[in-house]
Amino acid sequence: MGYYSTPLDQEKVIRDPVLSHVYIQDQIIMDLINTTEFQRLRRIHQLGTTSQTFPGAEHTRFTHSLGVYEIVRRICNQFQRNYPSKTPGDGLWDDSERIVAECAGLLHDIGHGAYSHTFEHIFHTNHEQITQAIITNPETEVNQVLSKVGPDFPNRVASVINKTYDNQQVVQMISSQCDADRMDYLLRDSYFTGAQYGKFDLDRILQVMRPYKDGICFKMSGLHAIEYYIVSRFQMYLQVYFHPTSRSIEVILAHLLLRAKELAETTDGLEHFNPTLLMPFLEGTFNPETDLKDYLRLDDGVLNTYFSTWRDAPDKILADLADRFVNRKPFKSAIYTDKTKDLLPELSKLIEDAGFNPEYYTATDNSYNQPYDVYDPKSEHHNAQIELMQKDGSLVELSQASLLVRTITGKDVGDSRFFFPKEMLQTDDNVELFKPIYDNFQRYIKNDTIIDPKEN
Ligand code: NI
Image (cartoon, rainbow, N blue to C red):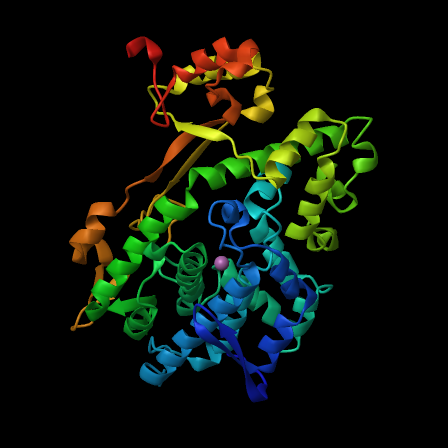
């Protein structure tokens, strides 16, 4: 069964640099935007530390979430115009599913926190679990707004986001290899970073999208628009998402939080540098079921304020890492391979000899992704593959129809890097004491890659 919501007397239009306009037509969408949990997304950057590399990338989870909602709304409009269901089960679009799809699009990232990726890694939180909690916990404003539509409506919205909802058309609008989420973030990240590669023809993709009984597919005539979209993703991973400088700042951030956590666990603690709002996380007492409020009070600004004050903390490592983060002093990095991996302990030893604790001043990071992968029944984490509908109604999987996509299908894109303090690359002679160590270290690095000096 479907749900209906109350339309606004007059639609609200929000300007957006990427999608031009976002149209709000239902009271429930307006009410969700005005909840404290959703407004909080204004204070969380979409790309975390990436603005340290691409200074324009100051956009937030708030604008991205509005964007995903708007793309979902446009998909529903197109489906309703061209493929309205006539009899139940005919595999076409049932417009009573619209409101659950739009709410899920709007709320799909509601559980993201400040510097999500790094924060989760250090404190073992999970933004997907928190998204579900915010939607289903009766204490949140989001839950109270959703419950007005129907008592089980919050659970339905939550099930779209965790992909267990019974209508695959709705699920795939929000999560598949060509969904409203990815389309919005690629366009938005491309626009705000200034990296032109992420652009593609959104209007054309929306025109050729169509519902069928098992989900969403694309008309064969849209092949080139889809190819272009896949290539954009490929380029954005290489140029933006895996940029070594952003990853380096992320390493500093992770080690900064780790140091704070370790200090908080010792008896002296952080003394008068105690970050009140972070304490449940530093002390490991946070429980997403009961302490949602603690999580919702954090945002980029709160964390940045703590980092700023930690620059004066008595602990040298905490103060130095905070300074590196706040004043953008990234680590340097070099690529390593299976062949040169065994050299990393030698390098760490030299870094230690130069006065840096390797636990905080070195790191490895492997960033890989596949710009497109084909359904693998053995994998638990498969994404719905992209399918094209031919004139006779039969489906072809994208890589079968496109030579371009076939060449990058299933290929890992990315690299493995070793991070270390920039000081290790100093070459001037004023650093007498450590000069032999620096010189020795530098024999291992050539063209941003780790080499074996014995073989060269
Ligand atoms: Ni998203």
